Image (cartoon, rainbow over all chains, first blue to last red; front, side, top):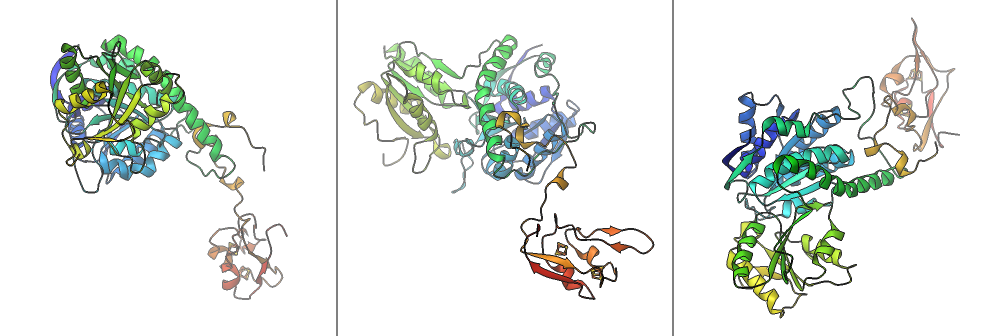
Amino acid sequence: MNKEMPLTGAQSVAHAMRQINPDVVAAFPITPQTDIMMNFAKFHSDGKVDTELVRVESEHSAMSCCVGASAAGARAMTATASAGLALMWEILGVASGSRLPIAMAVVNRALSSPINIHCDHSDSMGCRDHGWIQIYNETNQEAYESVFLAVKLAEKVMLPCMICLDGFITSHGVQNVTLHDDKQMKGFVRDYEPKKWLLNTDDPHTVGPLELQDYYFETQKQRADAMIQAKEEYLKIGKELARITGNEYPLFEEYQMDDAEAVVIVMNSTAGNTKAVIDKMRKDGKKVGLLKPRLFRPFPYKEIAEALKHKKYTAVLDRSESYGANAPLYAEIKSALYEADSKPKLKSYIFGLGGRNILEPDIEKVYDELLSGKFDHLETGYIGLRGE
Amino acid sequence: MAELKPYREIPIGGRIEKAGNSEEFKTGDWKTFKPVWNSEKCTNCMVCPVLCPEDCIPVEKGEKPVRKETDLDYCKGCGICAQVCPVKCIEMKKGDADE
Ligand code: SF4
Ligand code: SF4
């Protein structure tokens, strides 16, 4: 039976994990992720899951634990944020390089230094080239449902997958969430049936060996190919999930895009604020729209170029810096458009670092600037920065 | 070395499809000095087989164990055997494993 209830994003993710009932979960606290593990641990102690819940001593160990469990043949999950994700860095590569389908919620939070516990995307953007699939989520509902998609997608292409949601804004903000029927969701993910698993004594093999000049290169090409394949599989598995949830899982969401002249591209919770601004500006006859990427790795270059080709003005709003380079999302959009015959005038904005608020008037200003057509598209804009 | 395979034909993630294969990986080819053992002077005292960090000095078991020729496929040329041999019947000589 479906149940609608007010839940935080963290609780929503924990409920998804309860319904999936993974074989192994590694738990280590870090703000603002802790609420996921706290809620999951409660399900665990209440006997709602029979997961092996391993309380590790660091995030490096959390990911190592997942790597070991996954190689052994278990469905393994964990969750982290910010510095925790950074500490996992080495083992993130072991997970994807060894082609282990681990699913992990990442509650987006700024990286040090200075130390800051609030939302931006510098953590997950920092490891965007590490061979993990990344799905970004605007709402609690999206985050909840993406966990199921992530688990299945990871196991299909044998790559680990991150489910990203905004720290505090999504993880601690309460929304009405529809929890789908337990049995149906279990039926959707099914049991994990690895082709090879280390605990299978009839099929001894070696995971994570040394590869030097002779084979390392070939192994990386396989990983790159699997990532490309993940795009089609994401859409396929999304269609299957849609039959249960009634929601859609596109590569990116398009909001009021059909006749839009000015488009904002932004991920996660800020897309929600942007929709409110669009609704308001549309009432005044302004042709504004939103493109919200959901699948960031692999990145849907061709599809995004197609969606933007007849637009006049586009702004990409990044919630992280890439010091001395184009901001991560902007860089991808810009490179998506390189091969397009027709393309919008494109401007990069940075916003919300370390949890700095972005309010509706800020987004409205971006649209106004775009619609005026009078903007220096080569200069990076900073939203909400003093001195701008 | 076996013929190298193209990327589509190898197991994913660098996995090795069978276990117990590490002995196929010869690790002794980077030594600068190799131990040259004089079997006639050797008293089979069993000091060097025990202290060799590579465990590459074979021993024939029995009431009186017998030291056998060093397995140069795995010997790193560290020289410990030569150092510890009480009768100094091992000499470290420059040259690679195949000589
Ligand atoms: S040189 Fe070192 S590795 Fe080689 S046999 Fe002697 S002790 Fe063992
Ligand atoms: S230490 Fe010298 S004498 Fe003793 S077993 Fe080794 S080679 Fe022979």
